[in-house]
Length: 492
Image (cartoon, rainbow, N blue to C red; front, side, top):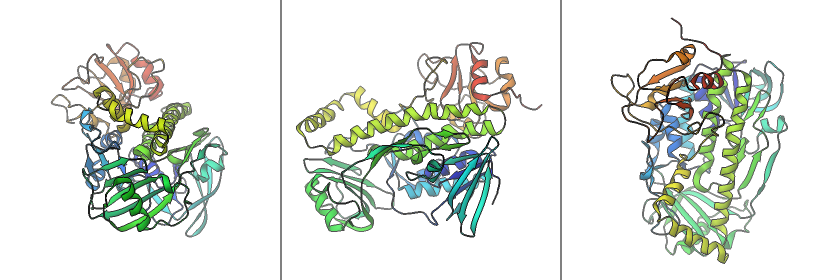
């Protein structure tokens, strides 16, 4: 175990493991610690959305997740004939992947360990102190107390984050009063299609199939909202609620686990305090509607990972890390706002809410409205502020085939080593970028990204545009200075 890793990650959930794979995969030494001795079976997340799969694909890490999941191209809307069409998306992954969080974590842990990250379970953080050179972290592990010094610490340790508390960052928000039900179980008479959900006067019930034949069951029963969340949920109680809401008996049996829960809506006031940063649920948490929690956490990891690497390499100033909060905070704030509206939409039984549900379902027949909703749920609508870089900056870049005879067959394959990618009419590094050639990969597309896109596009390691222009002289050097740091050409 390294006692002086460059980065100490606290929390071995999806966010912490994704960040560990990102860092270790580019040569940054990192240690992941988690207070649990083993992974729990109860988890909220049960889907991986297209944008998250794209990010994993950029690093060659999507296959294990895909192998453990079930592709659902038409997730339910909440009535018997309403479904989302993921086929409208410009992606290699036109589906929502139904997968238990534990299986997603298995794949991410495998990727992190293969990349060289070290994991230490059963280890709790008891305190930390930082100065201008690093952070000293005190912990209690299986062998007793230990102290680790790291240059940076990232708290990915969930809603009750010890790291967040240690740096004194406020976690503003509230708890919802409604008690909901959740379980993983088998169904003898599953309603069709594969993923199914209905909202009625009694409440909402949703079924999400997993590859092993079990289903994630989520129930909002308005007649049972006041039941204490700590009261054990029985199979009979869950079955009664589902039958009353759906008007059918799905034959729920052999539950792996059952639980009542109350959600909360909270947001850390800051994501950074010196050399300590927050990500995932330690920075933001919300209800599981739309399955956005896991997606947001992994996107945090991909945004932060390459920035930490450049700072640790001495290629970029420490101030680059400030862009992490500047970019991710508004994304999380918007997600919290939308999931709160979604929760109120699902739980309210007032006349305005019932009318709104009918209008919403009707509006989804409009192709433009439908596409917009699918893009938001999939993560494709996410965009970082264009700032002074022009209207293309901050946009997601979809995958495209590369023109022969380039070694990689697809654009996303150029991101495997976590570098920036510069697209142009040929694969030569233009004079304006020569001084950064060590951090660049070049590529020529076999087909355009889209209508009216500029010929030259600089793409960040997380797949978003850093700069775009008709000629490489139109601001490319300034963008490289800003995002890639000081010039450092390739050796030889």
